[in-house]
Image 1 (cartoon, protein in one colour):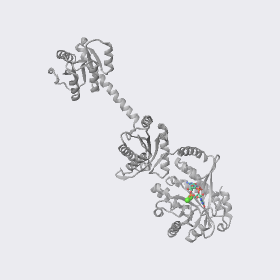
Image 2 (cartoon, rainbow, N blue to C red):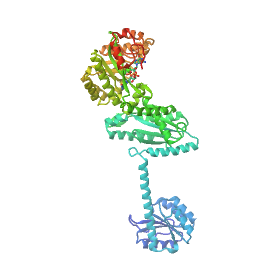
Image 3 (cartoon, rainbow, N blue to C red):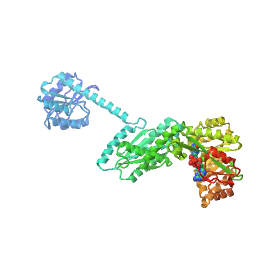
Image 4 (cartoon, protein in one colour):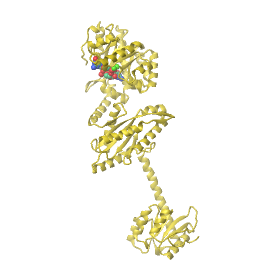
Length: 597
Ligand code: C2E
Ligand code: CA
Ligand code: CA
């Protein structure tokens, strides 16, 4: 082993392989330095490579250039003295453990030396070869242990605060960070925005392409989000296809909205999945601090409510939180709870509205329309609870009940002398995409002994659009049994004509919105005439909804409409009331006054 030349440049005192400990010895006195080195080498039986230098400055330079395992530092140096020496060394290199050497026994200093981060504190007067080498080795080992411990703690912390799939912060982490940012915004009188995102139609992709592709999609969404936000902002995944973005220092609503639009754009570009391009839209709800909530939990809840509204507005859009949403959400929850028990408690009723054939003036069918007799609120119209029943999945048992009841009731009327009477039952989009629908329908027919041709299912275009392939399949099966299909709210959808071609439809129901102004708005009259002529050419039965006046009826008659339905004849009425109407010879010459409920 060669001693290095004393000075500011050093040479290794030995070329040991990996296991050796590289010691940087910082000692101003050359003679003492040499003595120390021999002690170390002797005590470590050549396990230590010792490098020498004379001051803090040259030591710091060396630490930057080379890797050392431990620093043996005399605190009294020409360019630095005492604790100052240690702080400077530690400040420059936190990753190298330090063993400090001092001249005299000074307890106070000894404590400070350890507090400043030295691993060991040795007195020059008490050094011997073995203890010096052992102390150096221990310093290295202890330092390694601590940093390993810190690494594993860091990893543990990371796992507890991040989402494993996307590597984004998780809900827990986001809430903590949001709480901190709120405190900051509060102190500095700033606003911040929380964007709550949900991918529209993610479930469909997950269901059709499988979970692996679903996961890949989520990871890509996460990456795009991370790319569009500023460093000071934060993106997190709350779970499923729900993400949140926090934007600090937002000047006003417009700025938050712009940020949301940037996010929408970034997520709207094509996704490559299973070798094909897929597109997704996103809905975003925004809540602003301090206006929409003063703590993390309230802000997130407000943003979530705004998101709910965005979804209802037809997806692919941005909504700000409004206080009214809170009351709506509370009401929704209470309705949800009460719908659950309404079925058991037999609180649902079917009302029936006659469909009158214009030529004969007779009732040829009815449409079954559900009512809820809520013990607290009285009769609740379907618009107030069907959407909630759809969201909660309760529409499936409710829809099955409606089918059973309508079929049984219609069979009774047929047996009472109206054998050709048909009944139309409304289906929600959720039911049309549900493969169990066929069994439900068959069971209702079987239980009631109603002929399949007496049952018509009313379906809207949006129900068909939801999942075209499943809808085609499910309706196709029902058609082969002999059940009729009616396209409801015709004309209000997006691509009415193509649906007529693609789906096995028997009837079109012209939406009430066209009938309403048919006598005053020539556009509406043109549209209605066009629909009637298409229906005629395709040999479909045409039904006009919401006919309220004789003038409307006259125009429909001239246009060749087959059947009408509306207050002009009768509002939807309970079953026994409809029984009375059936007994009347000619409804067209004897209109009922609208007096529903
Ligand atoms: P829809 O299928 O378009 O039903 C027609 C709606 O127009 C009914 O409202 C009916 O009462 C109303 N109506 C009928 N004639 C007139 C009229 O001359 N003037 C006016 N202004 N309105 C008229 P309703 O009963 O409140 O039902 C609303 C919607 O709820 C229905 O729209 C249907 O989509 C849904 N719905 C009703 N029953 C069921 C059901 O059993 N299952 C499902 N899934 N949905 C149902
Ligand atoms: Ca209908
Ligand atoms: Ca309708």
